[in-house]
Length: 430
Image (cartoon, rainbow, N blue to C red; front, side):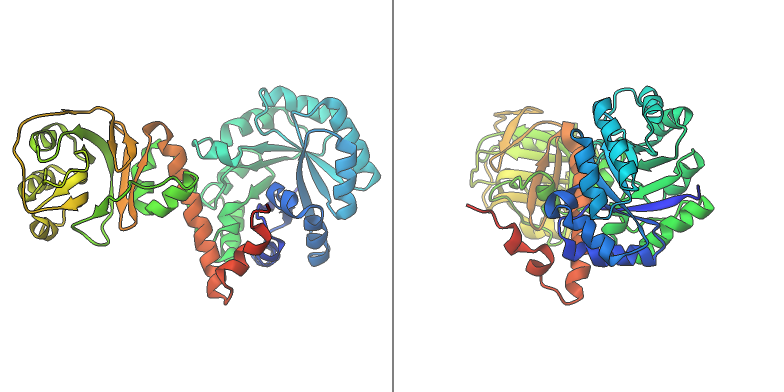
Protein backbone atom coordinates (compact mmCIF):
# COMPACT_ATOMS: atom_id res chain seq x y z
CA UNK A 1 0.00 0.00 0.00
CA UNK A 2 1.04 3.61 -0.52
CA UNK A 3 2.29 5.12 2.77
CA UNK A 4 -0.44 6.88 4.72
CA UNK A 5 -0.36 9.74 7.21
CA UNK A 6 -2.87 9.21 10.02
CA UNK A 7 -3.56 12.23 12.23
CA UNK A 8 -4.39 11.34 15.83
CA UNK A 9 -6.96 13.84 17.09
CA UNK A 10 -6.28 13.40 20.79
CA UNK A 11 -8.26 16.43 21.94
CA UNK A 12 -11.15 16.71 24.39
CA UNK A 13 -13.56 18.98 22.51
CA UNK A 14 -15.16 18.41 19.11
CA UNK A 15 -15.45 22.15 18.55
CA UNK A 16 -11.65 22.36 18.46
CA UNK A 17 -11.19 19.02 16.72
CA UNK A 18 -13.12 19.67 13.49
CA UNK A 19 -11.15 22.82 12.40
CA UNK A 20 -7.85 21.12 13.23
CA UNK A 21 -8.88 18.02 11.25
CA UNK A 22 -9.88 20.20 8.29
CA UNK A 23 -6.52 21.98 8.32
CA UNK A 24 -4.68 18.65 8.53
CA UNK A 25 -6.53 17.36 5.46
CA UNK A 26 -5.64 20.57 3.62
CA UNK A 27 -2.01 19.79 4.46
CA UNK A 28 -2.26 16.31 2.96
CA UNK A 29 -3.35 13.97 5.78
CA UNK A 30 -4.77 10.66 4.52
CA UNK A 31 -6.58 9.23 7.56
CA UNK A 32 -8.20 10.90 10.56
CA UNK A 33 -8.19 9.24 13.96
CA UNK A 34 -10.78 9.90 16.63
CA UNK A 35 -8.29 9.62 19.48
CA UNK A 36 -9.02 7.82 22.73
CA UNK A 37 -9.32 11.06 24.80
CA UNK A 38 -11.77 12.45 22.24
CA UNK A 39 -13.89 9.28 22.25
CA UNK A 40 -13.92 9.15 26.04
CA UNK A 41 -14.89 12.82 26.17
CA UNK A 42 -17.47 12.96 23.37
CA UNK A 43 -18.45 9.30 22.93
CA UNK A 44 -19.38 7.88 19.54
CA UNK A 45 -20.48 11.37 18.51
CA UNK A 46 -16.79 12.04 17.92
CA UNK A 47 -16.75 9.40 15.17
CA UNK A 48 -20.16 10.48 13.81
CA UNK A 49 -19.15 14.11 13.54
CA UNK A 50 -15.89 13.28 11.79
CA UNK A 51 -17.75 11.04 9.36
CA UNK A 52 -20.34 13.76 8.65
CA UNK A 53 -17.72 16.47 8.26
CA UNK A 54 -15.32 14.45 6.09
CA UNK A 55 -17.16 11.94 3.86
CA UNK A 56 -14.83 9.76 1.87
CA UNK A 57 -11.93 10.08 4.34
CA UNK A 58 -10.81 6.99 6.25
CA UNK A 59 -11.82 7.41 9.90
CA UNK A 60 -10.00 5.44 12.58
CA UNK A 61 -11.65 4.94 15.98
CA UNK A 62 -8.90 4.50 18.55
CA UNK A 63 -11.06 2.52 20.96
CA UNK A 64 -8.19 0.64 22.64
CA UNK A 65 -10.72 -2.11 23.29
CA UNK A 66 -9.73 -4.73 25.86
CA UNK A 67 -13.01 -6.63 26.23
CA UNK A 68 -16.39 -7.07 24.46
CA UNK A 69 -14.62 -6.63 21.15
CA UNK A 70 -17.63 -7.42 19.00
CA UNK A 71 -19.89 -4.85 20.63
CA UNK A 72 -17.35 -2.01 20.64
CA UNK A 73 -16.41 -2.59 17.01
CA UNK A 74 -20.09 -2.59 16.08
CA UNK A 75 -20.60 0.71 17.91
CA UNK A 76 -17.65 2.37 16.18
CA UNK A 77 -18.42 0.98 12.74
CA UNK A 78 -22.08 2.03 12.90
CA UNK A 79 -20.94 5.52 13.89
CA UNK A 80 -18.81 5.68 10.74
CA UNK A 81 -15.38 4.24 11.58
CA UNK A 82 -13.50 2.43 8.82
CA UNK A 83 -10.77 1.11 11.14
CA UNK A 84 -11.10 0.25 14.84
CA UNK A 85 -8.20 -0.27 17.22
CA UNK A 86 -8.14 -3.23 19.62
CA UNK A 87 -5.41 -3.71 22.22
CA UNK A 88 -3.08 -6.53 21.24
CA UNK A 89 -2.97 -7.54 24.89
CA UNK A 90 -6.67 -8.42 24.80
CA UNK A 91 -7.78 -12.03 25.03
CA UNK A 92 -7.74 -13.87 21.70
CA UNK A 93 -11.50 -14.38 21.96
CA UNK A 94 -11.96 -10.61 22.21
CA UNK A 95 -9.92 -10.15 19.06
CA UNK A 96 -11.81 -12.88 17.21
CA UNK A 97 -15.12 -11.27 18.12
CA UNK A 98 -13.80 -7.88 17.00
CA UNK A 99 -12.66 -9.30 13.64
CA UNK A 100 -16.03 -11.03 13.07
CA UNK A 101 -17.90 -7.83 13.90
CA UNK A 102 -15.65 -5.76 11.63
CA UNK A 103 -16.41 -8.07 8.69
CA UNK A 104 -20.14 -7.71 9.31
CA UNK A 105 -19.91 -3.92 9.19
CA UNK A 106 -17.30 -3.52 6.46
CA UNK A 107 -14.61 -2.24 8.83
CA UNK A 108 -11.01 -3.23 9.57
CA UNK A 109 -9.09 -4.00 12.76
CA UNK A 110 -5.81 -2.47 13.89
CA UNK A 111 -4.15 -4.31 16.78
CA UNK A 112 -2.34 -1.85 19.04
CA UNK A 113 0.83 -3.31 20.58
CA UNK A 114 1.17 -0.67 23.30
CA UNK A 115 3.02 -2.22 26.31
CA UNK A 116 2.89 -5.71 24.78
CA UNK A 117 5.56 -7.83 26.49
CA UNK A 118 6.69 -9.80 23.42
CA UNK A 119 5.67 -7.71 20.40
CA UNK A 120 7.34 -9.95 17.80
CA UNK A 121 5.65 -13.15 18.92
CA UNK A 122 2.33 -11.41 19.50
CA UNK A 123 2.47 -9.93 16.00
CA UNK A 124 2.69 -13.41 14.49
CA UNK A 125 -0.33 -14.50 16.56
CA UNK A 126 -2.33 -11.41 15.59
CA UNK A 127 -1.67 -11.93 11.90
CA UNK A 128 -2.83 -15.54 12.23
CA UNK A 129 -6.01 -14.36 13.94
CA UNK A 130 -6.72 -12.13 10.96
CA UNK A 131 -6.20 -8.50 11.98
CA UNK A 132 -5.80 -6.01 9.12
CA UNK A 133 -3.07 -3.81 10.60
CA UNK A 134 -0.47 -3.99 13.36
CA UNK A 135 0.12 -0.81 15.37
CA UNK A 136 3.51 -0.16 16.96
CA UNK A 137 2.73 2.36 19.67
CA UNK A 138 4.82 4.07 22.34
CA UNK A 139 2.30 5.87 24.55
CA UNK A 140 2.56 9.50 25.59
CA UNK A 141 3.54 8.73 29.18
CA UNK A 142 6.30 6.39 28.02
CA UNK A 143 7.50 9.04 25.56
CA UNK A 144 8.03 11.37 28.50
CA UNK A 145 10.69 8.95 29.73
CA UNK A 146 12.40 9.13 26.35
CA UNK A 147 11.09 5.87 24.85
CA UNK A 148 10.86 5.67 21.04
CA UNK A 149 9.08 3.24 18.68
CA UNK A 150 11.98 2.39 16.37
CA UNK A 151 13.38 -0.55 18.36
CA UNK A 152 9.93 -2.19 18.56
CA UNK A 153 9.34 -1.51 14.86
CA UNK A 154 12.43 -3.54 13.93
CA UNK A 155 11.03 -6.62 15.69
CA UNK A 156 7.49 -6.25 14.39
CA UNK A 157 8.35 -5.73 10.73
CA UNK A 158 10.11 -9.10 10.69
CA UNK A 159 7.01 -10.87 12.00
CA UNK A 160 4.12 -9.04 10.33
CA UNK A 161 2.28 -10.15 7.20
CA UNK A 162 -0.01 -7.09 7.24
CA UNK A 163 0.74 -3.35 7.00
CA UNK A 164 2.37 -1.87 10.09
CA UNK A 165 1.42 1.50 11.58
CA UNK A 166 3.72 3.34 13.98
CA UNK A 167 2.97 6.00 16.60
CA UNK A 168 4.92 7.60 19.39
CA UNK A 169 6.09 11.21 19.34
CA UNK A 170 6.68 11.25 15.57
CA UNK A 171 7.52 14.59 13.95
CA UNK A 172 8.68 15.78 10.52
CA UNK A 173 12.19 15.10 11.78
CA UNK A 174 11.60 11.35 12.27
CA UNK A 175 8.73 10.31 9.96
CA UNK A 176 10.92 9.54 6.95
CA UNK A 177 13.24 7.28 8.93
CA UNK A 178 10.32 5.16 10.17
CA UNK A 179 9.09 4.59 6.62
CA UNK A 180 12.60 3.55 5.63
CA UNK A 181 12.40 0.86 8.31
CA UNK A 182 9.21 -0.66 6.99
CA UNK A 183 6.27 1.25 8.48
CA UNK A 184 3.43 1.93 6.03
CA UNK A 185 1.19 4.11 8.19
CA UNK A 186 2.69 7.02 10.11
CA UNK A 187 0.49 8.15 13.02
CA UNK A 188 1.15 11.71 14.17
CA UNK A 189 -0.65 13.51 16.95
CA UNK A 190 0.85 16.47 18.78
CA UNK A 191 3.31 17.47 16.05
CA UNK A 192 0.23 18.41 14.01
CA UNK A 193 -2.56 19.15 16.50
CA UNK A 194 -0.35 21.42 18.65
CA UNK A 195 1.28 23.27 15.75
CA UNK A 196 0.63 26.98 15.25
CA UNK A 197 -0.06 26.27 11.57
CA UNK A 198 -1.67 22.83 11.36
CA UNK A 199 -1.80 22.64 7.55
CA UNK A 200 1.85 23.65 7.22
CA UNK A 201 2.96 21.15 9.87
CA UNK A 202 1.05 18.40 8.07
CA UNK A 203 2.67 19.33 4.75
CA UNK A 204 6.11 19.14 6.38
CA UNK A 205 5.42 15.61 7.60
CA UNK A 206 4.06 14.51 4.23
CA UNK A 207 7.14 15.99 2.56
CA UNK A 208 9.38 14.13 5.00
CA UNK A 209 7.51 10.90 4.23
CA UNK A 210 7.84 11.38 0.49
CA UNK A 211 11.49 12.48 0.41
CA UNK A 212 12.97 10.82 3.49
CA UNK A 213 14.29 14.20 4.60
CA UNK A 214 14.43 15.37 8.21
CA UNK A 215 12.48 18.64 8.35
CA UNK A 216 12.50 20.87 11.41
CA UNK A 217 9.27 20.46 13.34
CA UNK A 218 7.04 23.32 14.47
CA UNK A 219 6.44 21.44 17.71
CA UNK A 220 9.00 20.19 20.22
CA UNK A 221 9.64 16.47 19.99
CA UNK A 222 10.28 14.39 23.08
CA UNK A 223 13.93 14.61 24.13
CA UNK A 224 16.44 12.34 25.86
CA UNK A 225 18.37 12.91 29.07
CA UNK A 226 21.16 14.88 27.37
CA UNK A 227 18.67 17.65 26.57
CA UNK A 228 17.28 18.33 30.06
CA UNK A 229 19.00 21.68 30.56
CA UNK A 230 18.09 22.77 27.04
CA UNK A 231 14.44 21.95 27.65
CA UNK A 232 14.26 23.73 31.01
CA UNK A 233 15.84 26.81 29.42
CA UNK A 234 13.02 26.84 26.86
CA UNK A 235 9.98 26.35 29.11
CA UNK A 236 8.64 28.57 31.89
CA UNK A 237 8.24 27.73 35.56
CA UNK A 238 4.49 27.94 34.94
CA UNK A 239 4.83 25.22 32.28
CA UNK A 240 6.82 23.12 34.75
CA UNK A 241 4.25 23.57 37.52
CA UNK A 242 1.48 22.43 35.16
CA UNK A 243 3.61 19.46 34.11
CA UNK A 244 3.95 18.50 37.79
CA UNK A 245 0.17 18.58 38.41
CA UNK A 246 0.19 22.22 39.65
CA UNK A 247 3.10 21.72 42.05
CA UNK A 248 3.74 25.02 43.90
CA UNK A 249 6.92 26.99 43.43
CA UNK A 250 9.13 27.95 46.38
CA UNK A 251 6.98 30.08 48.66
CA UNK A 252 7.82 33.80 49.02
CA UNK A 253 11.10 33.39 47.12
CA UNK A 254 11.30 36.19 44.54
CA UNK A 255 13.85 37.46 41.98
CA UNK A 256 15.83 40.35 43.47
CA UNK A 257 18.34 41.25 40.79
CA UNK A 258 17.34 40.62 37.15
CA UNK A 259 13.84 41.10 35.76
CA UNK A 260 13.26 38.75 32.84
CA UNK A 261 16.19 36.54 33.83
CA UNK A 262 16.15 32.76 33.61
CA UNK A 263 18.04 30.46 35.95
CA UNK A 264 18.48 26.76 35.19
CA UNK A 265 20.88 24.47 37.00
CA UNK A 266 21.38 21.57 39.37
CA UNK A 267 21.17 22.19 43.10
CA UNK A 268 24.21 22.55 45.31
CA UNK A 269 22.55 22.66 48.72
CA UNK A 270 23.63 24.59 51.81
CA UNK A 271 22.19 24.85 55.31
CA UNK A 272 23.12 27.76 57.55
CA UNK A 273 21.57 30.06 60.18
CA UNK A 274 20.41 33.65 59.96
CA UNK A 275 23.34 35.92 59.12
CA UNK A 276 26.02 33.17 58.99
CA UNK A 277 27.48 33.47 55.49
CA UNK A 278 30.41 31.04 55.88
CA UNK A 279 28.80 27.92 54.35
CA UNK A 280 27.09 29.75 51.44
CA UNK A 281 30.39 31.40 50.43
CA UNK A 282 32.41 28.20 50.92
CA UNK A 283 29.95 26.45 48.60
CA UNK A 284 31.29 28.51 45.69
CA UNK A 285 34.55 26.53 45.87
CA UNK A 286 32.83 23.16 45.62
CA UNK A 287 29.90 23.93 43.32
CA UNK A 288 30.40 23.21 39.63
CA UNK A 289 29.74 25.24 36.53
CA UNK A 290 26.04 24.98 35.76
CA UNK A 291 25.01 24.55 39.40
CA UNK A 292 22.59 26.71 41.37
CA UNK A 293 23.47 27.25 45.04
CA UNK A 294 20.37 26.74 47.19
CA UNK A 295 20.59 28.04 50.76
CA UNK A 296 18.36 27.22 53.70
CA UNK A 297 18.95 30.14 56.08
CA UNK A 298 15.78 29.50 58.03
CA UNK A 299 14.01 32.48 56.49
CA UNK A 300 16.27 34.90 58.37
CA UNK A 301 16.40 38.64 57.67
CA UNK A 302 20.16 39.17 58.04
CA UNK A 303 22.06 38.88 54.75
CA UNK A 304 24.09 35.75 54.05
CA UNK A 305 24.98 36.83 50.50
CA UNK A 306 26.29 39.89 48.68
CA UNK A 307 28.12 41.37 45.70
CA UNK A 308 31.55 39.80 46.23
CA UNK A 309 30.14 36.31 46.54
CA UNK A 310 28.10 36.97 43.38
CA UNK A 311 31.22 37.99 41.49
CA UNK A 312 32.88 34.73 42.57
CA UNK A 313 29.94 32.74 41.18
CA UNK A 314 29.85 34.78 37.98
CA UNK A 315 33.49 34.04 37.17
CA UNK A 316 33.05 30.33 37.93
CA UNK A 317 29.91 29.82 35.83
CA UNK A 318 27.50 29.14 38.67
CA UNK A 319 24.02 29.94 37.34
CA UNK A 320 22.48 31.66 40.34
CA UNK A 321 21.57 31.41 43.99
CA UNK A 322 18.31 30.81 45.84
CA UNK A 323 18.13 31.83 49.50
CA UNK A 324 15.48 31.11 52.09
CA UNK A 325 16.80 34.15 53.87
CA UNK A 326 18.29 37.52 52.94
CA UNK A 327 20.75 39.00 50.42
CA UNK A 328 22.28 42.46 50.16
CA UNK A 329 24.15 44.65 47.61
CA UNK A 330 21.22 44.20 45.25
CA UNK A 331 22.08 47.20 43.03
CA UNK A 332 25.65 46.03 42.52
CA UNK A 333 24.58 42.44 41.84
CA UNK A 334 22.00 43.68 39.36
CA UNK A 335 24.79 45.51 37.48
CA UNK A 336 26.71 42.26 36.97
CA UNK A 337 23.49 40.47 35.95
CA UNK A 338 23.84 37.64 38.43
CA UNK A 339 20.58 35.96 39.40
CA UNK A 340 19.63 36.06 43.06
CA UNK A 341 16.29 34.73 44.30
CA UNK A 342 15.63 35.27 47.99
CA UNK A 343 12.98 35.82 50.63
CA UNK A 344 14.38 39.11 51.95
CA UNK A 345 16.70 41.93 51.02
CA UNK A 346 18.79 43.66 53.70
CA UNK A 347 21.74 45.99 54.18
CA UNK A 348 23.21 44.27 57.20
CA UNK A 349 25.26 41.10 56.98
CA UNK A 350 26.09 38.73 59.79
CA UNK A 351 29.31 36.96 60.73
CA UNK A 352 30.97 33.86 59.12
CA UNK A 353 30.63 31.38 61.98
CA UNK A 354 30.44 28.16 59.95
CA UNK A 355 27.24 26.59 61.24
CA UNK A 356 25.39 24.13 59.04
CA UNK A 357 26.58 21.97 56.15
CA UNK A 358 26.58 21.38 52.39
CA UNK A 359 25.18 18.84 49.92
CA UNK A 360 22.47 17.67 52.28
CA UNK A 361 18.68 17.61 52.01
CA UNK A 362 17.30 21.03 52.90
CA UNK A 363 14.04 22.96 52.93
CA UNK A 364 13.90 26.16 50.89
CA UNK A 365 10.71 28.14 50.47
CA UNK A 366 8.73 25.22 51.92
CA UNK A 367 10.02 22.88 49.22
CA UNK A 368 12.38 19.96 49.82
CA UNK A 369 15.62 20.23 47.83
CA UNK A 370 18.19 17.46 47.46
CA UNK A 371 21.66 17.76 45.89
CA UNK A 372 21.39 17.38 42.12
CA UNK A 373 17.71 18.35 41.87
CA UNK A 374 16.94 20.73 39.01
CA UNK A 375 16.27 24.35 39.98
CA UNK A 376 14.49 26.61 37.50
CA UNK A 377 13.77 30.25 38.26
CA UNK A 378 12.10 33.07 36.36
CA UNK A 379 9.86 36.03 37.16
CA UNK A 380 7.02 33.70 38.19
CA UNK A 381 9.05 31.92 40.84
CA UNK A 382 11.46 29.04 41.49
CA UNK A 383 10.55 25.41 40.78
CA UNK A 384 12.28 22.31 42.14
CA UNK A 385 12.30 19.21 39.92
CA UNK A 386 13.56 16.01 41.59
CA UNK A 387 16.59 14.62 39.77
CA UNK A 388 14.98 11.23 39.13
CA UNK A 389 11.93 12.84 37.50
CA UNK A 390 13.76 15.48 35.47
CA UNK A 391 13.47 13.99 31.98
CA UNK A 392 9.78 13.13 32.37
CA UNK A 393 8.92 16.57 33.82
CA UNK A 394 10.96 18.34 31.14
CA UNK A 395 9.14 16.54 28.33
CA UNK A 396 5.76 17.13 29.96
CA UNK A 397 6.59 20.83 30.30
CA UNK A 398 7.40 20.95 26.58
CA UNK A 399 4.03 19.34 25.92
CA UNK A 400 2.29 21.96 28.06
CA UNK A 401 4.11 24.77 26.24
CA UNK A 402 3.19 23.40 22.81
CA UNK A 403 -0.47 22.98 23.76
CA UNK A 404 -0.57 26.56 25.02
CA UNK A 405 0.94 27.75 21.75
CA UNK A 406 -1.92 26.06 19.85
CA UNK A 407 -4.57 27.58 22.16
CA UNK A 408 -2.94 31.00 21.76
CA UNK A 409 -3.39 30.78 18.00
CA UNK A 410 -7.08 29.97 18.44
CA UNK A 411 -7.50 32.95 20.78
CA UNK A 412 -5.87 35.19 18.16
CA UNK A 413 -8.60 34.07 15.76
CA UNK A 414 -11.11 35.88 17.99
CA UNK A 415 -12.17 33.27 20.54
CA UNK A 416 -11.89 33.74 24.29
CA UNK A 417 -9.99 31.29 26.47
CA UNK A 418 -13.16 30.05 28.14
CA UNK A 419 -14.72 29.30 24.74
CA UNK A 420 -11.63 27.52 23.42
CA UNK A 421 -11.37 25.36 26.54
CA UNK A 422 -15.16 24.92 26.94
CA UNK A 423 -14.76 25.68 30.63
CA UNK A 424 -18.44 25.51 31.54
CA UNK A 425 -18.65 22.00 30.14
CA UNK A 426 -15.65 20.87 32.16
CA UNK A 427 -16.42 22.51 35.49
CA UNK A 428 -16.34 19.92 38.26
CA UNK A 429 -19.81 18.64 39.03
CA UNK A 430 -20.73 18.38 42.69
